[in-house]
Length: 369
Image 1 (cartoon, rainbow, N blue to C red):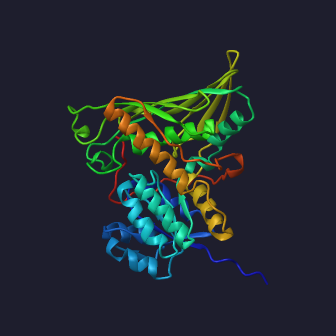
Image 2: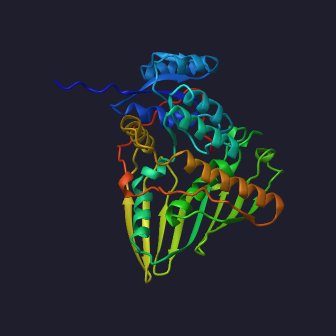
Image 3: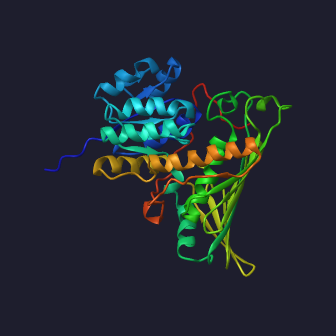
């Protein structure tokens, strides 16, 4: 007789738009992971979402420590604003509860290092939620470059933009707010996993727009250039004040590739290779990126494998983002001390889960207009 393993019991901390539109329905698709608890200070969200997903434990933030001490959960998915990540992650990790934390990992290096230390001391797993490390379109681009189909990769260029909604938490005066940490991190991470190297210098310009009430506390955009040790360059713009756009391209010595909708989680992607003026396209259907990364995380917990992306992957991006901020403030190039990485995403990490339907939202609205 075969005994079925108990599903990984996961608490979702924070019930904002992303949690409701992606995290909860994504986890709900998985047979070996269950939503065991919801954490929020909004009783109406807890009631509606708890009933919808059949969740027994529904607690406020004041009862979070009791929850992670209870033995009723194995892991937490932290879907809070970045300035709260370290606190809630460390409190779980110290009690041996595994943590899957949204990116950016934290607004400071010190917080990132404290999260890593808490995981290493307790033995609990810490993974940062880089969903694109499991997504077929991005991994196909990685594989093409690894195989030399572009020749030697030399130039990365990207744009990630949206029209942010006035009053959204992303433009409030708090650490980790603004376009750089929220969406610029995708461009930084993509350049790193495509070049498979760490930048050693950054140059950045911050674009302020105080006449727009949305940008009283955060910049509207950043324009950034990253230099890599082998002479490659990565440039990108991230903006909260431009129409929706999400793409990157990599130019090699022999060909280039383009990925449209590169960073999105609600749409499919189109990968185009341009060689000798001829274009070759491949389309990747929309998949459930959150379910995929949670499935991978659950496998790491069960097998004891160290996750990729780890806390060190999160730290590497945060260190670069902070250097970008310093460059924008000073007007000068800033040298980056790289976080050495011996593991990077590749095609072997691809996880494919069919998309879920569109959930009904409870007391939240999308970040973009």
